[in-house]
Length: 56
Image (cartoon, rainbow, N blue to C red; front, side, top):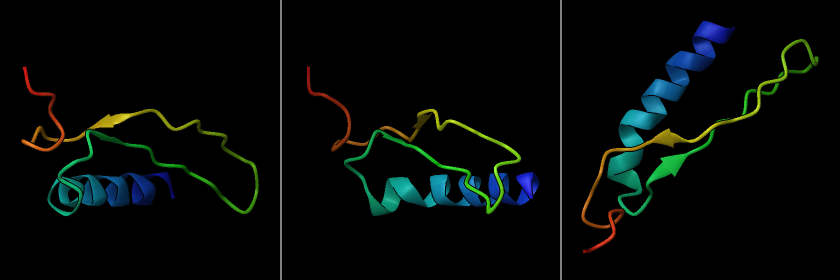
């Protein structure tokens, strides 16, 4: 199940920059029917775009 969750996370991360160009990170919750694994989501960096990178 963990490998499946990681594969889904990777797929969403690959698409997120195209679908949400203003986003600079995403958080993924891993939640199961039973609390066998309690994972607190951490930020995952998305590719930089003109819309999610501060102008200097």
